[in-house]
Image (cartoon, rainbow, N blue to C red; front, side, top):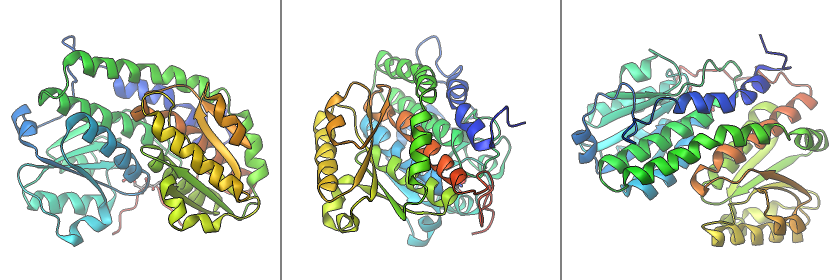
Length: 369
Ligand code: M6R
């Protein structure tokens, strides 16, 4: 049942290329338009949207954080991301022209469900991104885009996360197109890049041996820090969350630029710091900033584990361990950069002798508030 893998988590990590391909399947019409399923909102409703809130928990919240970058860049509508458990208690300003996007693998997270009920009471439109057909969250939403990740058994979310990213990208592109901010050919150019990600991911998954070795090395670390910028920031948070939940180790993710405002004081001789480096193409400025952050932590004794685009040879000088990932456009890069972090957490947990698929104190779907 684990398809030859030691854990469901490893099986599900390996299934990610297929899960992405399945989630993309049939989404692009012959006219180059994005086709969403069960979207009981008219194009006019979507054109009237003037603000987007994304609500979710845990890993799904990290997918929402990535989505904000893509949606604001493509659609040019303000988009906020909020932890579902915090959303309704601060009395958010919502009305008919607000679109609330609820992201949930299980479709049963109580925090997310309560956030969406609150949004509906305030007359906002609710669109769910969900991996579980017929679950409560999609049933109570005005529209739903299903991720076709297939069942996820391991408590730690992996393929659900990547397919949630794909769903968010599709929603962003769809909104941009129907609102006239992007032309059909611009949309299909991005979709084409998305369609290339399963192959790139297969290549990446074929090279995880080094990450496994590294995991054996890091299993006794007392803390592991993760830094990233732009979409690499939620990836850093996700890497840290995986390590906490599976390896029961102290781990924290930071926006790389925030280091100097406090967290850099944590760096000691040998502290492992995982650095997610943006692509040198396009926004090279961002990449250079992260590289100087890497130099800063290294100067203070950090052991740097650098995830960077293959071909970015200059980073090698600052990396104690370099994990190259296939080139991908900046906004889509989390589809690559997250994967070594999933493998790292899984392998560290296994090396520490933990139950990878069923970590202590956690449940696959959290149906209490
Ligand atoms: O089913 P959901 O996507 O609503 O679940 C949200 C979180 O409980 C979930 O992502 C959790 O953080 C995972 N265990 C992370 O691996």
